[in-house]
Length: 104
Image (cartoon, rainbow, N blue to C red; front, side):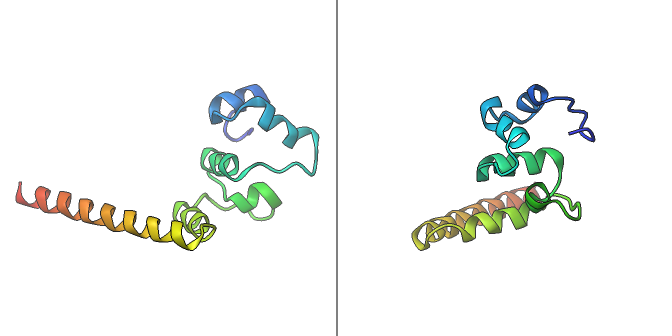
């Protein structure tokens, strides 16, 4: 928090968009853990890995692709199939935009 210029929990609430009642337990109960969505939000905010926030150790930057892969791996087969279809859609849309730009 100090590196990000966030001085207290109230400022962390504003910066992260995570409700104070969900943040506060991490500071007062050593065994308290954030939910996955809050952990991801904080990792992005502080540009550190989720592992660093949970366990300490070496400070590594947030890696979007690693976070996406971890989230995808946690999905069941049907949800992974839906995700794959959506990624196919995004690839096609991106390819079409690239083609449009090249024609311009």
